Image 1 (cartoon, rainbow, N blue to C red):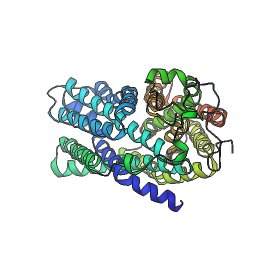
Image 2: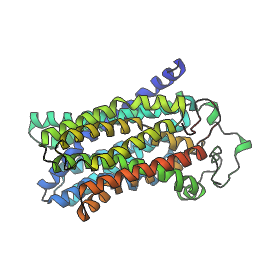
Image 3: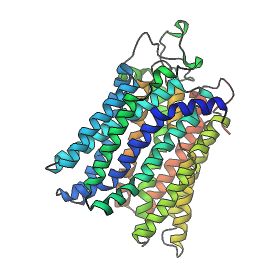
Image 4: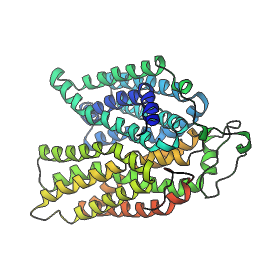
Length: 432
């Protein structure tokens, strides 16, 4: 990384990466306990799973309103409001007298997480120079993964210390208070870090043009703000092509989190072994997050997207044929590591591609649509795995996920070169 890149990324630390770690750390501590607390409030297994899914559903529903909010009140204020409203959700989770209130609180936290995430994404889209955009956004994804990786261990420690699941929720509340204070009282990066020259829109380029399906190099002018739904229509071609490719990657990632524990249980492994294998896969994933950004900045977006999708697609398909083998446990561990490598190589790619094709002057409405598509892919995938497993078998469902991965690789190969600008060194995203 160049001196200029390291200097700018360091300046992002207190206001972007710091709040991200805090928010993800608290959220990661709470997520594993949501089904347990729901069961304590009277939910059966299916209902507890439904309550846990309220977090994802809330995030999915929050993306479009978040795009509207960021476009009108700015990234910093949106982050502060999202953090404050999340505190309301935390209080609701702690003192919920019934299951419905608890589920609504979980939904609210997911809804606010969408605003928090989109504000950071929008800010970095407009402030990070294109030459090291992928590294900056991969680092953002990596800080989120760090918090989500450490959070469950913090929750385990709090459970051992206090013997009460609500201790982790209070810890989340403390993280949110620290996040809001950091956002409000820390240096304002919107004032300290001006947009790079390449993101400044002149009057000569301020005419609005509909999406023609060609590379998105124009922008929505700052003089005329465009609503979220109008933006979706203007950029319908890139969203329906490259956006669906991105949704397929999100679907494969989400399926990995569901398939690996189920696969370990299905082949007869104990919970400790399954947790160890999944944990090692997650550690490999986390270790590669910055390497992904280096690859994208130096060689182009496809050099990260294609290997990631091919590795995960073939990994799932190969795993599907190992269920009844005598060495099933060995193959499970090996392909879990392969999936970790594939997922690690894709770190930051969805954030980076969204930033690449977003309008430069007012990216938030577009990013709201982009994140809605990718979150929808992640939300639907576990449901498809469950449905296919119920109708046939887990092996068939795993193979189907692999096919989705390979189809997504083809989609990236087709649409990334068409929609991602190719105007200079480090920006090319052509096929390797």
